[in-house]
Amino acid sequence: MSPADLENAPSRDDLEDALALLVEVFHDDPFYVWFEPNEAKRPAVLAGLLSFALAGCAVHLVRARESGRATAVLAWHEPELPPSNMPTRGATSILGRALRSPRRAYLGSKIWDEIKARRPRDVAHVVVELFAVDRASRGRGNGRALLDALLARADQKGWIVHLETTRPENVAIYERFGFRAVGEPIVRGSSVPTFCLRRSAAI
Image (cartoon, rainbow, N blue to C red; front, top):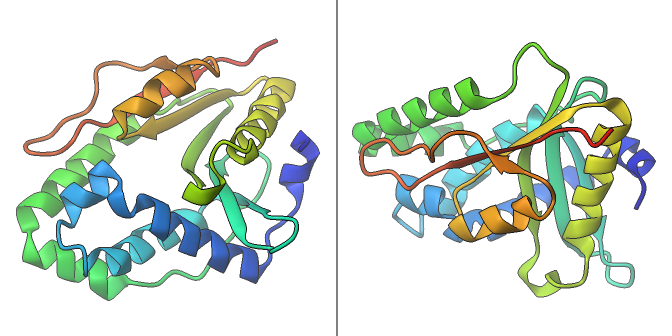
């Protein structure tokens, strides 16, 4: 995969399949398990939150050659490519979650404020908002190809790349791509840690 491949706009089917993959992969993400402990309600809350994120991002989906099944997705903000404008859904589920646990919703908003404060400002940059690989497809290079293509694009443009993860085991993986921690992990109240990482352009 080349950096130019990332410029291909996703279809509506791509966006729907990207959301379905994200909901599946992030179902056991530490932050979302903390935010919505109820497993039965979590998919609807995830669909709402993640569709809002996808709507504001450039999106690229990788499919298996033979089956066409979605295997990896990357969603990011950058200075040049437009957002996907995916239709959002699940506002009722998100509101319901906030009403069921206003304290947790309040802490979630504070975490989001801290995340935004850690992101680069006053310099051209990329923010990786969402990155997921289908469990059955891991170890086949699909995720690495996606991330390599984005990092190569950022290097060509001289952009900083920033991302967050709530999985501690991911930190070492991203460090192998040149990312370094930005401050201490973000924790508010009973929340799980959010790790902020940044990579300078390789010029």
